[in-house]
Amino acid sequence: MLRMNISGLIPKNLEDRGLLVLKDNLRYIEDILDHRRIPREGIPEDKIRLLLKFLSLMDTDKDPKVVRVGEREGRCASRIQEELVSGFCHGIGRSGNLIDPQPKAPGASAMYRLTNDILTSFLRNLGLKVYGIGLPVATGLSLSLCLNAARRMYNSNVVIYPYAAHKSPIKGIYLAGFRMRFVETKLYGDKVKVDVEDIEDAIVHEIKEGNNPCVLSTLTFFPPRESDNIEEIARICEEYNIPHIVNGAYALQSRYYIERLRRALKYRVDAVVSSSDKNLLTPIGGGIVYSKDRDFLREVSLSYPGRACATPVVNILVSLLSLGMRGYLELMEEQRRCRDLLEELLNNLAEKTGGKVLNIDNPISLSVTVHLDPVEIAGKLYNLRVTGPRGVRARDKFGTCYLRGYPYDYIVISAPLGVKERDIVAVVEKLENILLSR
Ligand SMILES: *Cc1c(COP(=O)(O)O)cnc(C)c1O
Image (cartoon, rainbow, N blue to C red; front, side, top):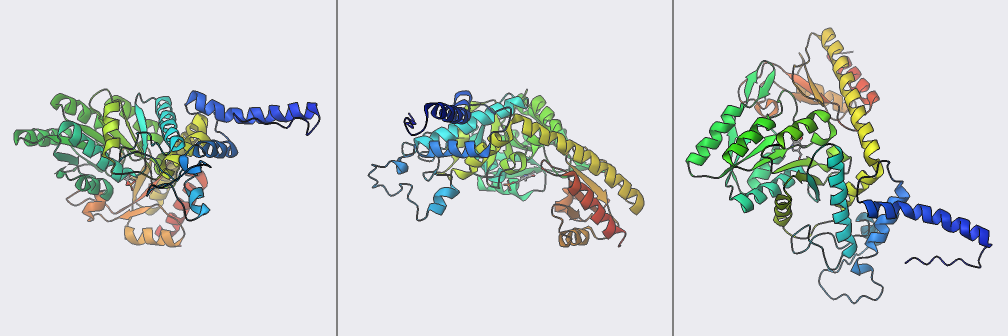
């Protein structure tokens, strides 16, 4: 298609050499399109840009002979806007169904399908036998779309929610128009968790009352709230034949969570939702939904009202292509090292300050008890230019996820994907200075 006619402009041997170099550069793009899998090695940025350029040049707003009279024709007031959406001015989706091809945007439609294929291969490489789709909304709204899909497919009318104090999923449940039935957490030593028997009781209760419950469980959370036992919940949901959505906001970055998902996916899991920014290092704004059930994913996409901005999806594609599988596995490895380092440093700190590191199963975050006001400590850390740690008071029921009194004031520090060892060293050093008021 691209006739690169430089014949006669330069000597023949130079021409051959030049065309050879060009061909090998274009091969990156051919390979991505041929294989539709996550590359082993990351792809250089200029090739990714070229791929996006080629794809966006297929959309009808780029047609040099186009006659555009609709009210929505991918018109832009400024080229800046075209750059901000990587050329995909038409967005993605058709008549509110996200994954349906848009006649005005063959390039954006191909880009979206390509992203989902590459995302699926990424998830499979991590060991999850699922299909994945990228969504143009973050975790809370993605959960809303999944719950709406559960209503469309199974007439669900109440969400059973083992209490986890994050506002996004709770708002997501209400936005989807569901009644919510909390299942309370209980305290086991330092650990805050929800009993599976209590979840089963809630299911039985709702069914008895003639309702169609579904369960929204939480895999990733801050300590002292432990992960829900998603394996057992999945087994129970299979037994009662009710939908089960898992909030795995940052599940993809850790082997521990992936292994738990693998076990849960043997039973009833209709969809898992993860954040594109927490797991794939994109700017905020995208969600990843994955499932063994392609029909469910289709319902999720059908739940989206309207056309969507392509950028969150492009961001997912760019992350997957630029990291490659190797880059991602290296980041996971670094995350694990940083988590171990954080534990070691916090244990040393606790010894000096008379606190303790809470005994909670969590592959990302740790909590250390403190004798000063934890909210003030978090404020001081912020002023020392540290972002991320949370200070939670024992009596803050929302923060602790525990509706009675929690025994400790504490600070939560995370070592998530993308963190560097020097960040871990610096945060613990600054925390030590505050606690020993130096
Ligand atoms: C990050 C996170 C969310 C975030 O939701 P967004 O809609 O992406 O802001 C929800 N739940 C949990 C457990 C999280 O960690």
